[in-house]
Image (cartoon, rainbow, N blue to C red; front, side, top):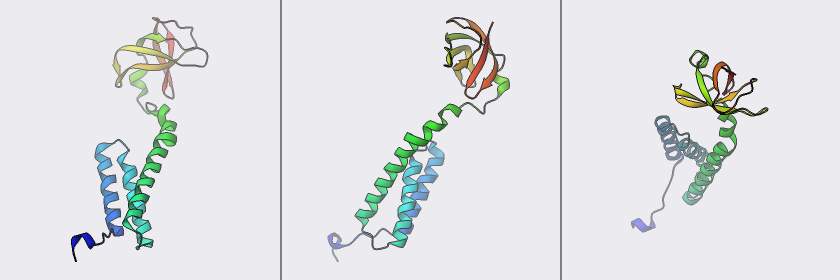
Length: 155
């Protein structure tokens, strides 16, 4: 049979293998983006397992749609929920007692910003809360943590 008349067959195990390979690549990349393409490939593998006569064009279309929906859902809905917890598990001992300069004073229930002379735990600017009235340029020291914000007192 000539090559132009051969039909392409994509068995379920090929989709699942490709999906697992993509998810394994994600371990080394760490962007949490490639994972969704891999998960979509595994899901298409399950579809092909139960509907083996599904055309290759339909399989690829399902994979592309699932990849897009999963990635978009992650970045649009799930990832923003974890944004305020990025520094929540860090060591209190490294932060408490640090002295910095107020760049933006907290207003009401809002957060301000402090800058330390040297980076603390990888960042020289942090969000702050304070019961003391603070102005730009004031020196303040860290007394506690509240989620992702530092509690400071004026010096």
